[in-house]
Length: 73
Ligand code: SF4
Ligand code: SF4
Image (cartoon, rainbow, N blue to C red; front, side, top):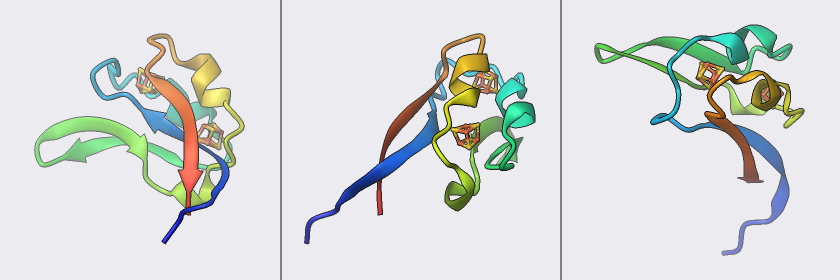
């Protein structure tokens, strides 16, 4: 089976992210979240269906810790 490239989606690079939540606050689609998972604070796209790939989170991140990647679905 082949997956078709359809659009872009945000992806947080965990090693660069300090969980400042700037991206969470700017996302108009509420696609991102900063929360504690198994005792560790992380930021990630918790609702991929809501991400439009607009790139506003990429632009605001002070650590270049979020990028747009190909979405396969
Ligand atoms: S803005 Fe960047 S550093 Fe801050 S939580 Fe988002 S991805 Fe992490
Ligand atoms: S690319 Fe746009 S819609 Fe997707 S998480 Fe970032 S700010 Fe939200």
